[in-house]
Length: 427
Image (cartoon, rainbow, N blue to C red; front, side, top):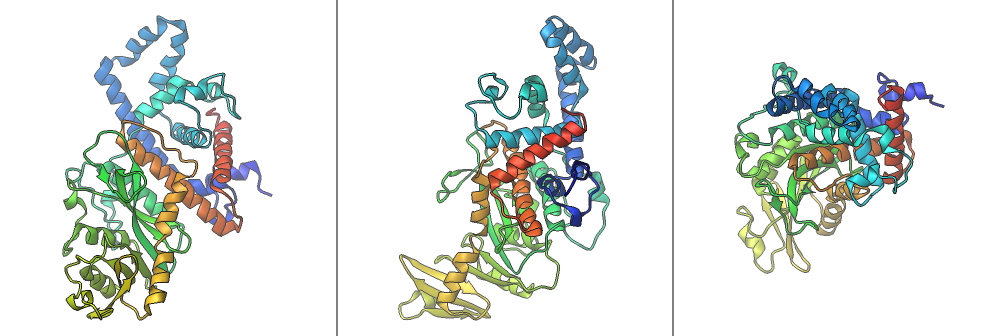
């Protein structure tokens, strides 16, 4: 049986992992936490200097000392944000997703009782400071100096090309960890996920087919059989097309698919499933040259869709080595694939394998840690935390053979995070 010392051992090997917190730390690693801590401190110190001047510590002390009950705030305000404070903030957010109270103040109220007394864990003032100061690292200088054959290691962060470069860097670092500890299976699904946002932002998308129609779009590449998230890309939108477009791509959707597939550099044959927004005959030809099998649904307005298949009496057509089959249901659907299969098998396989991202989206909604905020980038940060938790759960089940629910996994994760912080004398 594993001991508490093993749980808190940060150098524990991958094959010795056994508890939820250890799997979570694989993805939301110390490197990412340290980057957040450094960037948050720099941002917060600068905001204090802008507000109070270079001598901000003495000025804040004078303001706090006027009221004795405010004096303790001086310690938290001037101390800055430590590495483990980021982990504490994450633990609190997960707890809030499990236990929904009417508002934020309720978690520090005596009228609501729970397993943890937040007044003893963290003062409300310092929690607000963390929420305010949390800032994304713009880029890691070490990444710029790396020279590697792999294109994902030579990821270019063009600050002026896309206003969301900070968010994409955060998702990129998470994706690196997702890929490091998982071997992608034979079947792949690519689809978009919508991060709900009710505030004002020019970067929001409107997707009428989604239950919640307004938000930020993130493209996900998942394992079709396990629903594990392998890679993700924040949609650059109209303002950031140059940030993502690859040379030789005919459309933004084509560029996004190729960008998501960049980390896959082994020789295994894989089947890719994606919907009509991404699909085109040109993209399928490029994927075939790269050695991928792919199956999709083409829109009737697709430019390269053979004209004869639209006519009555024709249910099959070829475009080079790509088979296009018509399916007559409530509406006419055009399936396209580059391997031989009959229409019924093709339709059944596509309907099953193309659900991976939708299933991952469903996991995101279970005991979600998302809350309303006017700061759009906080939504993406919480999405990243949730993605790391879900992948932790999936990897935990694969490695240990134990099945668990999302809520039970999060409950144990919160307990282990708080126990870990208590061992470090943070709380």
